[in-house]
Amino acid sequence: MFAVLKTGGKQYKVQAGDVLRVELISAAPGDKVQFNEILMVGGDAPVLGAPLVKGAAVQAEVIDEIKADKVITFWKRRRKHSSQRTRGHRQKLTLVRVTDILASGAEKSGVKEAIGTQAARIAAHNTAAPAEKKAAPKKAAAKKAETAEAKE
Image 1 (cartoon, one colour):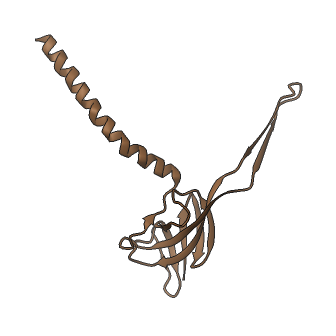
Image 2 (cartoon, rainbow, N blue to C red; image 1 turned 30 degrees about the vertical axis):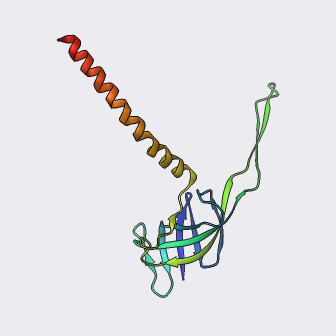
Image 3 (spheres, one colour; image 1 turned 135 degrees about the vertical axis):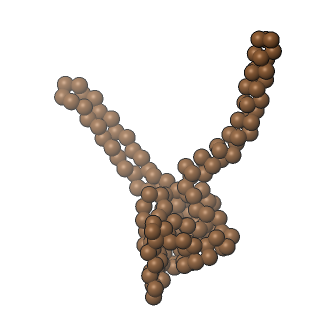
């Protein structure tokens, strides 16, 4: 049985036991994670998603967080300006081993969903933001009450 999953803007065809290098996800080494964006489940009875297969998931174990090979970018300006710049970048990746492919019942598995670090940062900020936003309307309501009293 195989599955085609989507994570980090890329698609991967996986089977149980495969080791993948995916974009950085918010999970520590040794954690079990579950990829829920499944585009296709293949095997004896292949299922294509429209766009995703409902209830399907791929479970994996995080092995390690690694860095990709260094990519060097070099800019050289026009003639007579003698300006140049070299810059390097190493993308952070997560190494995962696929343990299981679920054709259905992903909601009941109880395994943590694999989300990218950007999505995790946004979720963390959104949970902290409502507490601050709750305090702001009280101040605004107090100001409105003061202006209403001042007008009377």
